[in-house]
Length: 212
Image (cartoon, rainbow, N blue to C red; front, side, top):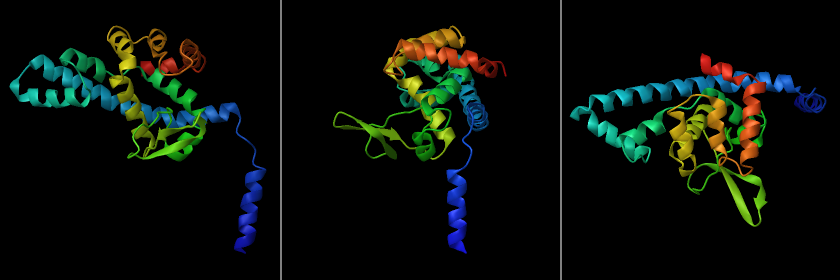
C-alpha cells in the first residue's frame, strides 16, 4: 500500500502544473513582506531608542551606546545612527525578489538565504554554490529562518565599507529610487543591477510598502 502512495505522490509531482509568474509573486509577497515588516519595525524601534539615548547624553546610557558602536563598527555616535537607521522596505523586498528569483532559488529553499549573502567563515552554517569561480568554491550563509536572513542583510548594508555612500544618503532621503543608485557594489553587474532594482520596485509597486 505504501508503495502505491509513493508512486502516486511522484506522479502528481511530475505532472503538477507549474506556478505562473503571478502565482510566484503572490506566494513571494505572502512569505517575504510580513517578515520584512517585522524586522523593519524592530530596527526602527532600535534606531529611535538609540537616538534618544544619544540625545540625552546621560552617563546611564553611555555603556549601551558603546556596546552598540562596537557591534556595528561605528566610528562615533553620528556614524552609529547612520548604520542603525533601516532603509526603505521597498528596497529590501525588491532585492529579495531579485536575489532569490521570487523565493524559488536553491539558496532560499535549502538555507533561508533570500539575499544571496556569501559566507567567508568556514565555522558558520553555510552551503556551497552549484558553480565554482575557477577552482574556488563559493559559499552562502545558511540561516535558521527567513527573519534571520533579513536581519543579517540589513546589518550587511549597515556595516559594509562598500555601502558608506548608501548610508550617508539614507539620512537625507527615503526615496528608494535615489538610494538604490548607491547599491551598485551589491552586485558584480554594478549599475545594471541598480537599474533593474528600480524597475522591480516600480513595476511591482513595492514603494507602497514604504507608506504603511
